[in-house]
Length: 479
Image (cartoon, rainbow, N blue to C red):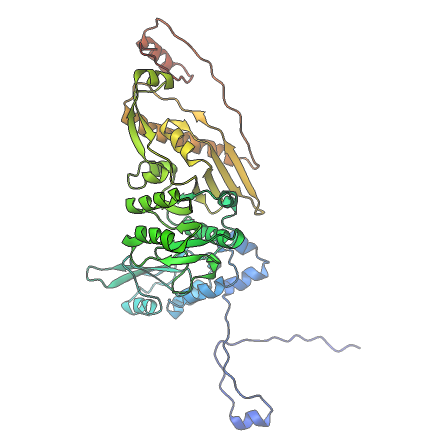
């Protein structure tokens, strides 16, 4: 008869045991005591591993590569013990976005699903001092970091300069986050990334820098304003691969560092994060004219935001008001005062980052700007990452918008841009509702109606009452 089965349960204690006396250790044959360090893995990460990874995959950017767990642990060390344990026990720990610590208020942890209250006890000065003592020095932009990590610690100060609040933002290097833009990067054209804060522009641009340096063997220089791309400290984060980095001592000096990178280090590609001033836009334009591939980010939601921004419109070629002659205005079918692109665009193409899995790509930025200024819908590619990681794209065809010919030039410019965006968004939502890839290359045909000897007021009255859409073309004598 076989012996009865038994189960052996091993309990691991986080409290170090009391050391055995030397006499007992030698009597029972125990080896000499050696110091060791116990690596503790957060509970939520262990659960995700047991689930085979679906939790990490579903969290998108939180699909943590090797080494990111250790970096996340170093960020959590800024928190007091009780708060750290609350964060580690959260099921969405791999997707942690940031931790908010404001003096006199309860601390918050922000996850994709929403804010999570860490404690009812308000934050004290001691908590803030504990956190700031473990990070680097705060610069003029009130940002600091943790050496050789991508985390960003931003401070809020009172009028006397004392720190009364911290925003501890989690930074991650996510391999494959730039796969949707791989063809644009490989072609060697300059690329501009546009998106609101927190959408993942820095993560994508970091992966592009690594892709250019490692995969395409280019000499890449990163102009790192706040050490967000290459991490804090003098040794860059391995997430940028073989790319080199220039740190910016002062944010107001970024445009000078850009020129320095070109003149001193002979790069083939330059990566910049957050172009925000006219001087930086001018420096970027100078670099692009020297034949260097440029990859940069700018805050905004759409291309129209850059067109209407007087500080950054140079990135898309600039905008100027032009008065046309009667014959040219008649040929174009527009009013005599129109908006046109002033010069060549700094960037070859642009991408509007909608989310971490969806982009709106403008393969020809100059054509997009010209179309928007003319009140037409630009050619846009919607690129998405499928559930299996495959790249999907939906092509949108250009289409002419319908504009009232009696509007003044300024109103025409503003309304044409907003109408183009509304029409484009509606088309996106219709196509996104489909569960498959849609390609549209057909152009709608229309009927040309030539009216002679008809009163203009009667014609407009008919158009307003008709359910059809009309485009009007004028010659020197009227219709």
